[in-house]
Length: 370
Image 1 (spheres, rainbow, N blue to C red):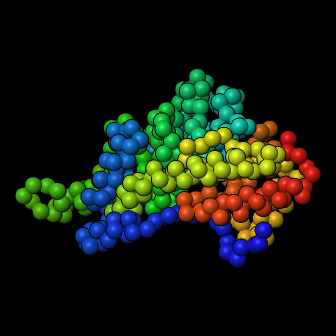
Image 2 (cartoon, rainbow, N blue to C red):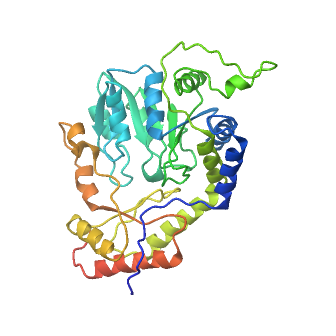
Image 3 (cartoon, helix red, strand yellow):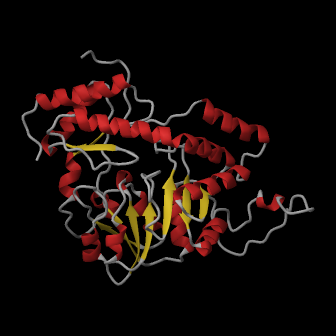
């Protein structure tokens, strides 16, 4: 097959005139900060995921940080999985908590309830359960061995049916390559009004939003306010919310394409390649090959202008986050993982091109994946 002369990325956002029209409405309105569009996005998003309250924030990371601060957790132990982005292990450190990183299950690569039971301690007050690649973490099983607060990280699971409903709070991501992309941004959702109110007031230094102070009857804009509690600056803007509303409108078609790519990979890739557990979002399409050839495959595909990645290097391998324990699953499995391209605008030709060269590589290598 002829080598194409353009790069096939591993992930890519998609937008067209729909997103442009939503943004133009906000630009023309003259209200670009937190306002009516954020309220609309929060309301519609909460309804979509089945929660009463939603708070728009600047990122999933800031959302998790706000939840920890709203709960007043400091100096406690927070359990999180080693196969995850840095957020889940680093945010506890921001709050002077212990980052208790545990191993994952071999099939889903999500947090292992057995390891939670093994490594929890008397100070373990929170657990961050990541729905890795959109596959729901086994929170029901975790609750049998852990009685603390569970934050469900739904960064990869927008939208998998039931996502966010097992934890005590859910935090979502709209980062540039997520299924719903706004460049960056996040959402906190919950049925706990007290927690929602506390998180919301912390998004802007404890100050009521400017928008909310324009909504009083017969008073116009109320400029006066009092800061009564410590807050931060991580509220969502109407520009971001406009993108979110547009992306939410097209979410079914975005997910349908990702699932079709997943199905095609599953059907056509070399049989020696281990497929991932089926994902309703297919945030990443992560296969496993023998660890002896994984890096060779990455280089081989790069030479064919196919971009791949690894999601993720185990967190416990980073110097800052090193733990004094064994990780028998992740230490073996992560060396086999490779993320293949999967995104809405991926053409049939590009998909067949990736499959052809992955399979060609496997034909040229005699190592059989086990």
